[in-house]
Amino acid sequence: MDQETDREAPLRDGSVTATCPMCGVVFVPAPNQVYCKHACGAKAWRRRHQVAATAVAIPPSRSRRPITVYECEACGTRSVGDQRCEGCGSFMRRIGFGGCCPHCDGAVAVADLLPEEVLPKVMR
Image 1 (tube, rainbow, N blue to C red):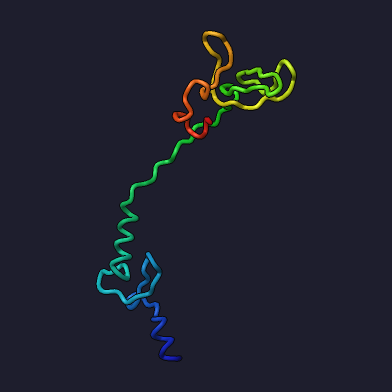
Image 2 (cartoon, rainbow, N blue to C red):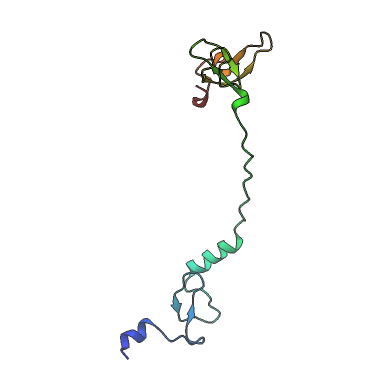
């Protein structure tokens, strides 16, 4: 056998060599040495003592159609939750989130009530 090969791959005798459980390097251990270097020992300690990640609960999805205001481009009629115009039968375009006005019972979008600077980009 070649002497260089013997130096690169030491014997796998338990009393002579050990394998680092963190990085897999074969090394000659000192008494009671488990890891090849201090960095591997510190990494193992951090893994043993890290806090388990909590599971993120994602709420179930729900439809936005019941709270969306639509407007017909042909006749200008607005409705909440209905995408098809009752008058002319064409599909309406989405104005934004909103609901029925408590005074006149007409469809009112939130974007109509607030100034544009206050609205987030999602609602514009």
